[in-house]
Length: 267
Image (cartoon, rainbow, N blue to C red; front, side, top):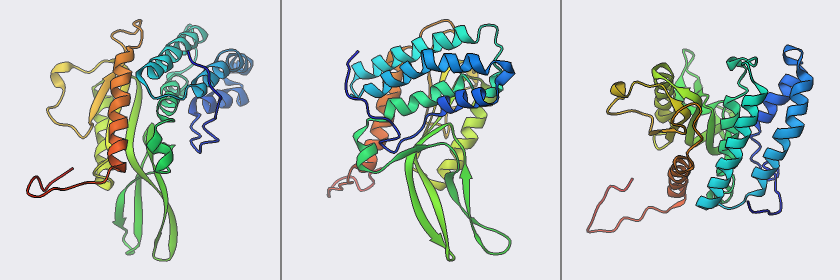
């Protein structure tokens, strides 16, 4: 793997260390009286993992494959640490690994810096409505990972911070029919406020009945990273996911050129 000077996500304004936050919360709360074990795990495995990701600056296929290799090795260490499944699924220990990986994956896209984009997951803009008193209300929706822009807006002499999404990602350890329905609901809500947003699901493995997949969906694509639970992550799938997100963000920065005679509708 290549070695370069490290710049942190905090320094670039892209602070999205949600897995580190999860570890810190378990250390502070002494989760199941094993806060010390989490502290040791963080020092021995998480900190080196994080530093190696931050040292990778390229957006080439080789760089993405390097990031996948780091992710796979860290997942293996997390599985050993959680042997016996003593960490509850609800505590988000494993899901936040994939959420934070998205930040490492997209942090060096040139448009992220040039357009002043950032990463967030809470309170994403999903439209406007008017309440019973005639006041404007901003609708929001949460999603596991989102790339977008935070703007200040004023309605009726009140200032609001609005998180405009460009790409949203739901990150799942596995995806089943119920989870897919929830992802579709989230995508539908976000597209109600931002019709051009792309919404993806990445899941380590699939538990959806293939025969029940819809012909149309507000979710733009589902990427399944493993064939089986014990299978390694497929780097090519991550590269395809990365490329599709990169293309979606690149289109935002492109000026739409309409040449006549020719096609008038350019989306």
